[in-house]
Image (cartoon, rainbow, N blue to C red; front, side, top):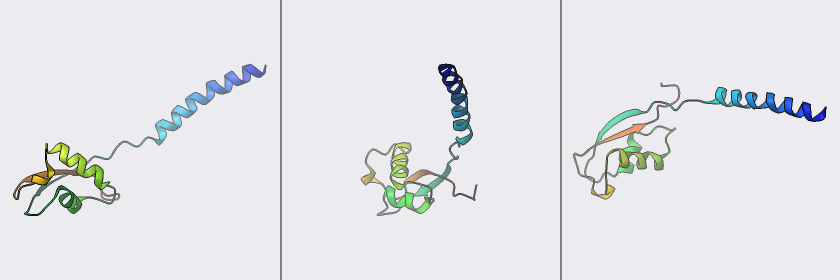
Length: 94
């Protein structure tokens, strides 16, 4: 009898855990696209800092920006070069 209750509880617990996970899932926010023109002395970090929201991790934002813009050497950013930066929307401003 004891084993039967364990099987019943396990059978009920699995769907409950799955339902809780589905309920708690929040899809990622859609990113906002900015086009920023580099000036003399700008870095990818400084350009990202101009448009980053409080919800952005700067390291991830800089890495993603370098990859999305196909920049092989971030030290060779040219004045006038257009950089596309995708940032998270600020909470409450969506």
